[in-house]
Amino acid sequence: RAGSRVAVFAKAPIPGEVKTRLIPALGEQGAAALHRALATRAVETAVEAGIGPVELWCAPDAGHPFFAECSRRFVVTLSEQGEGDLGARMQRALTAMLSSAAHALLVGSDVPAMTPGYLRAAEAALAKGHDAVLGPAEDGGYVLIGLRRVVPDFFEHVRWSQPDVLAVTR
Image 1 (tube, rainbow, N blue to C red):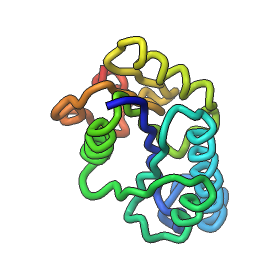
Image 2 (cartoon, rainbow, N blue to C red):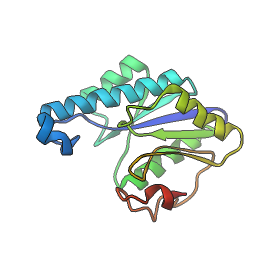
Image 3 (cartoon, one colour):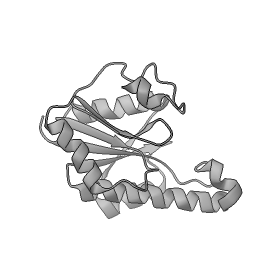
């Protein structure tokens, strides 16, 4: 196992199903357009980081035309997040990536401040021997997780969307 792989988690930009808290201000179409722009930027940033193959992990499945567009435009592979809560889906992705890479990084699609340098710094920390790296978010969660090895049931006791997600994960 050598190198790193990067996963971007994204939902299909379906009006009424993404960025729902912004629908009152933007409308369903506007919220979906914003999500599409953010997800596109996340994939582009991951590719620009140049730290390894990029995979777009899709929800609810990989069949939406947006995902095919990303695959063609950025030359990324598509995988399906599958069933389960966020932790189960992240565990699945990290396990799959670590089966053939020394390091795996996973980012969300809702991180407009993410830069290629940020991803490279996270990968460098793993390369220096750190077992894990977390990119904290302002809401108490995190925008990035990187691992050097699979940790069974790593996300089992995390209550998602709570202000202590980062602390519990640590």
